[in-house]
Length: 430
Figure 1 (cartoon, helix red, strand yellow):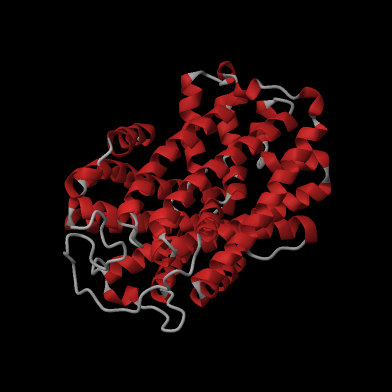
Figure 2 (cartoon, rainbow, N blue to C red):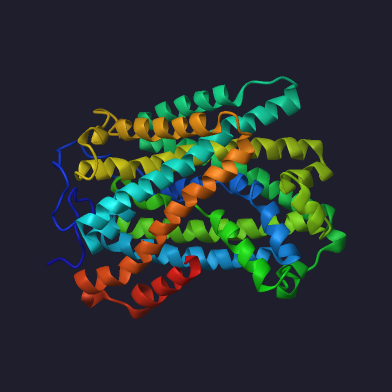
């Protein structure tokens, strides 16, 4: 028997399916390189959107030492990254968590994971769908003085992104990369300018554990929010079928994305605290502290920061949907969901049916439950709900890794990578 499984099999769960396995055209092999999937992963994390709506809460509970919660979040996400990376080295699959957990624990767990992770991702993406229109409405009102209903803007953006995704994985990933690049340039620029403008009172106080408000209690309250900022780190795993040399490139993309985003968040957090002169009370009362920090320096920088928020929501919608809808496609291809969801565009080999369902349900959630709710408020509520379901999947995948390697590849089993680190991952998010 080969040391590694067939990475792109349409029936990876011990040859068992839960409905007819249909023959469909494959996704476009080799369309993506390492830089494509790494960029897609970081675009899915959406640092501007995540940091804008999270850091005030982290600072409110953890105080000046709040960057240390981000340090520990980096460690926790890296532990989860080890699990996904090790699975992807053995059986890289568009099914991602569904394939990995199903291969380990069998058909029932495969179906359960399909339901839980699909619902979780759709709910989480509905928060992005919501804020795409809501944030744009805020920008238009602030800088142009008139109002366009966010519900209309949201629909327009969803339609645009849907057709972009159907046009091809390489094209849509490129656009996610363009939005992400603009976002990062602005975030880094504002952070550096803030540090230069406040050079007279730079210190290492934010990295002193004694400055965490409330000690372990404050840390415990801030840590889950810091972990939330990394949601999307798993994006590249579901792009395996379209990635060149996925066994090597998917793990590399995971680790590189976690490291780069972690260091970026530390820069943003430190510069924001410095810009507020270490006054966490004022910082936590600002709706978006990073933008307030930019406004303290320059109105132009503030405008750029608002635009970065928009590009962040767009990159997250493109990259997140590209990856997450493919889990639905793969589950349908394997017979776990209705076969109609496995339909591909015959020319571009993109899963248009799963995109349609993914966006349709996400938009319905926004309109049914969030129509009369302030978009920023609804964003926080619905994103939290979706994240809980996704976090459960993270937890189960960590439990699955040692079982998988002991059962299928005992000769490759590593006590560190396949047992100790997954256990630490369970403890980190449990």
